[in-house]
Length: 443
Image 1 (cartoon, rainbow, N blue to C red):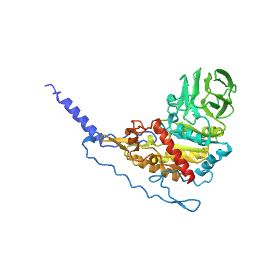
Image 2: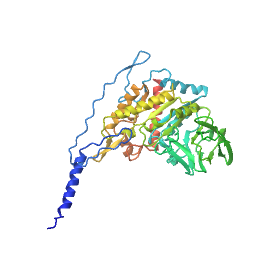
Image 3: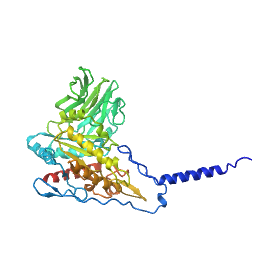
Image 4: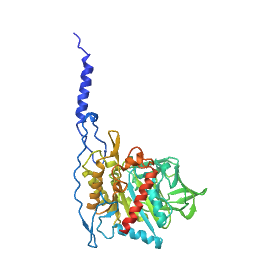
């Protein structure tokens, strides 16, 4: 007698259901520095609504300032000002504030390196902040900008175009282990690669090209300015090299063409001899662990020309795991990164900025993910234990459910991923940051 195969589909279906139910009860492990996926519960709709219980916040300790007066480091939950945990007189925010004040009268230069993720890519937030600082302290130019970018069309302070013929090696795609620049990229020409930069509001003055060593002492590049093309010999005697492309005369458009396929090219810097400049080093998907790949020689090599006065470290979006309360791996990652930065930029103050608000869908309504305030507190602790300054962006932008209000309000300030801000939101955050920076300076 033949087997009754009618029962086979029933057995398969019920076996699959049992397996899926068992898997839905297991929380997938978080792989440090790599993933940020959330636990998926197949029975979510029929489970009772149980809110996660977060661990109580630790009591905030008082810190004694050098004046002998107690300072309450309450930036986590009840303050929006910048708090400085540094105890080195050469690496505190006060040193940075003095530099800002000095350039008003001395016509000097202040430069900031801003490391982050997709929250700041395409000069988002940094561009709006730079404009405010330059209006107050002077300056003309975007600072560092790469040869090629997938978000080139989103830049608001400069028109950025290229023939997409550069080979882009970066944190995610670098099989040959080429030396990457501070943005996490290095570019090689495919034989006739060009990038063009056009001024939007103010014309360019000083423009510099940054390259690595190619082994050819006679390297050159072609530069076209105002319709006139020149061949310029490149500096090639250091690990990181700077070549002058424009020496102060005003130009509205500049085109760089490279035919040398063995020359590592990082990008250009558009600036002036005085004022404030912010270099945007945003790389999407970065928890901060990718930045750890940068070689100290590269960090020091660029600093030989930029002479940074402040290093801003702004990560967190890609570290958030829904409902997670354990960020020990992030603590270790940030500690390594901060120590690497301090070693590469000795005497330069470091400002750690917390994650912004992030929302998730809770039964049809978007609310702040419970993991956000946990991570923010962790970031404050990281700043304290590693003796850096700290600014609580989450609290300063409004705290709980801010991103939902920014997405769903009459005026939208954020995209519907409930994570990233749009240009209006970026301008709003830049305005808040500028205000808190000046307030903290007075304090």
